[in-house]
Image 1 (tube, one colour):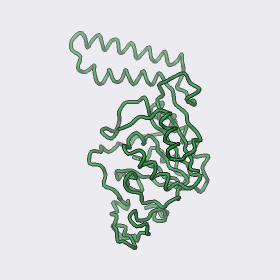
Image 2 (cartoon, rainbow, N blue to C red):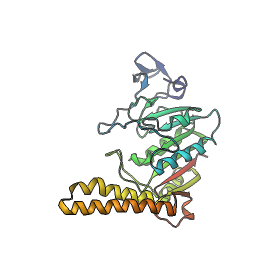
Image 3 (cartoon, rainbow, N blue to C red):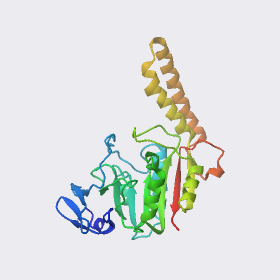
Image 4 (spheres, rainbow, N blue to C red):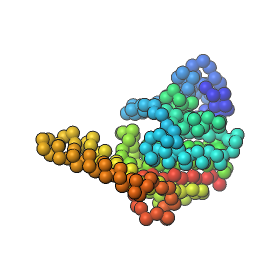
Length: 282
């Protein structure tokens, strides 16, 4: 357990400090206990329907164009944070951005006890962090997996310092993932409404627009969902056409270039791959 974690958390029932024992945290006042699993405090039980993620190598030039855009976005935002600021990476999973965060005081939180996590908790139902204790909270491809959005955002705002930032990357035109815990897609209008409802300032709101990525998503859906069930000559013709379309898409990408990141009002596209947003608490 990271040494500064014990200073950041309190009993979610009465707000008192914890005493740390070998296998659990115990509230010094109400005696509420929190188990430690391999040194990780587990405040909420992991969802039974969750399928644990596999660890993937991430980086500025790895993964889908959307993932690479996320990396550039987060790298630029981390450079703007206070040097000694404390960051909470919510939905950190297998530590996709661990190398970017290595120079900061950060805590990795997830609803599943991955080896890369520092704390296991569903912040929609339980919040063990001290009020106004965090300089920044990261939601990198997380918000779409939260059903009780308003409860969740309220919980996050409660633990942000005044002036603290909520740094968000959220997909829009992408396939369902981490099923069945994939619930919602947000337009930029919805993100603006989230800011209004929670008295947050929008420092940045930009969309990532990549029609080639969108085309490849559709071709991949044909390849893996429909082509295997085609029969006889239909399958042969479909596979030939699909191969040709993949080649043409590659040529088209060379002509129109890679995706671009723009404020929504500056693009003619109505099909963003996703959005990057920075909310700030007054």
